[in-house]
Image (tube, rainbow, N blue to C red; front, side):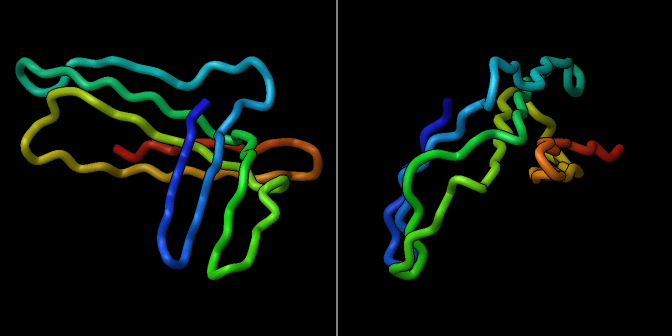
Length: 102
């Protein structure tokens, strides 16, 4: 579970991202460059619980889905990120995908 706290004049959030069922994120560790490494962990179509207020208006987060991308390592000085992420509901089914681009 990931926890997000935000206190801004326009946005106040106290949210938790939770997998809807026992689920493992996409995780990978690979060599990078001549002697580096990169670890990435991505998880999509997660339930959101908690509270979100935007410009003083409380939002109903029950129908929201979210995701996260965590990366760490020794990347090259010039690293280019090309990927997209989508979270949504198609009927009663969850859609959570990540598209890498070479």
